[in-house]
Amino acid sequence: MPCLSIISCADIALLTDQGERRLAQAREYLVRQQQAGRFNTARAVEVVAMAIDNAVWTDTKGQKEGRSTYAEYKHSGLGPVRAREIVGASFTAKGVTDQRPLRKWFRFLLGS
Image 1 (cartoon, rainbow, N blue to C red):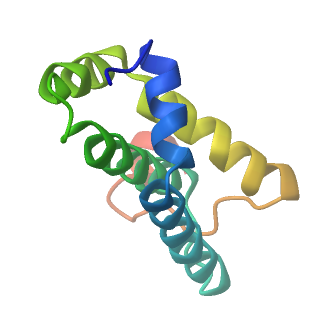
Image 2 (image 1 turned 180 degrees about the horizontal axis):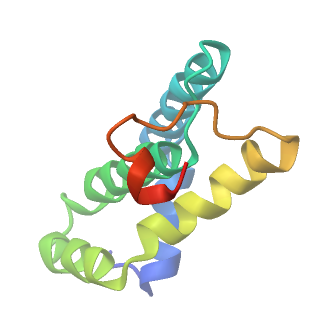
């Protein structure tokens, strides 16, 4: 059954067992990064976006028009948007900030 819309397609994929498992693995990884003092918001968004992308692909690949549905989802850019929402609700709302120091070769660009 094709997804009714791209948004509902992503939401449905996250509600499946595979989607919940992938999102839980991403959260566990980010918690480990936070405990190690290496949390980075941009990287957290990338990790969660990859988990969402994988969940959508797993959910749509068995469908008749799964490739086109997944291509529409990727073209919509919804993955990173949803990832920012999830990271914001899970980590940023709890007061977690970036813990990694600036890289020494980027300091001159950033004025530090």
